Image (cartoon, rainbow, N blue to C red; front, side, top):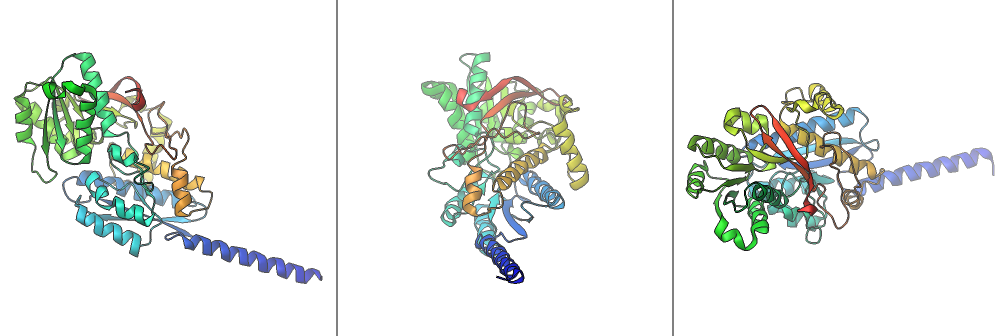
Length: 403
């Protein structure tokens, strides 16, 4: 065979393989030879709009990734829509993302009720529904929803840790529980019940609120009348902030634990007043950029440099941004583990096979771990207390399995 003919055949074969590669990429909606489409819904308006900054921060993060060459030669297109924390709007926007925008996966969608409204549809469509901005225990149910995975330690584990710590300080303590009337809030209730067991009825009083309520002042007044030693505020930022303010106004001094998702200094503490929140406790797994302990830390220095260059309009001290930056890094780890095979099946497979992943903005000793039977990427926390200036961590890293 003449050399020139062989070269032509080889060139033809290479071209065919290249075209086949493009075809395979395009078999996955949202993935082409040059693009990966990622979708999300969030609350840019409505009762928890303070948390919507996460999507804006992640938009900046993906721009940075694109500037650095993208993933497997592909640029990320990040599409997110405002659902105002309204489940019917979430349904509308998720259908739009999957059926019109043709996203490859959904990422960091905000809220228990919004995600609950669409989880069955997303799993029927077999779209990866990854690292949700929720705290519910049910988001680790890999049997019921194999295409869905949360990220943060669950609210139930958090509440178990709070209750155990409170009882160590005061055996026989009475508990007051303010909880959001949805799966998120009910997990906090369940966590305290797990620890108290048969004593729950005699040692605990619980009052719920709706996300449509204007305030929780009346609920706090009702719980104050119980003379409880411990108050747990299990809900989202707006209402946790209101509970801190009302407790201060009443001069009530319980051991006050708040949801870890509502500890933002910029979004919760400062609007309430730093002094009003003194001695409030919570749990952490992400480094707080407000904590002087991290002033020389390489991970926080990287985060600050990212914010300054790529998201200068964002508040570098807002821990919602730190969280968004952290979870985006984990998604990048998943996509890189795909090694260019960006099918929905492989994306989900890699998300369920993360082994001791260290992220520079997670607390030392806390790593990301998943498996086909573990859809709880983070199970470890450290308790912390607001000292008037910053969140001060205390005690050891606690794993949920130890509780």
